Length: 207
Image (cartoon, rainbow, N blue to C red):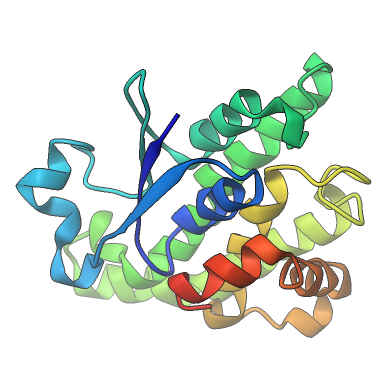
């Protein structure tokens, strides 16, 4: 089954891209340039009317939103053991973490460069940007103390939550988070960089 994957550097699409490579999926990747507004070109809007990345074209149809793509890949390639598919409660916990990355951590990050999504007032945008470092530090604290079980997000098993967390930590330093305060997060990020799929994909995303 051949998949077509749409991504952009420095975006949350990094998580799905790592998983695609890690599980050995048959896929083709197409890079969008967000600065050139590729995401709003008619051709791409026909694929994803939201004008966002990532998007994954499958034989059954088109999927968007990172938590959905990650779960789809984990279920489609169960031999990769990227999710606790045989444990409904653990799978729900995994989904809870990924949903929070999507709904909260990503949104805090986006307030830095994309405040115009929420306000046309330039002063309001500056206020949102000024809050990013604190918000992202608060998120890092929660991940360090409560979410990251270690050595991987869910404990001993490497799952789709790990590339997603790697994406979040890739943003944190640029968002003003002092990663030296979070040794467990820093260690997770370092170990992720040693994974072959990450070594291959990360440079394509500007990491």
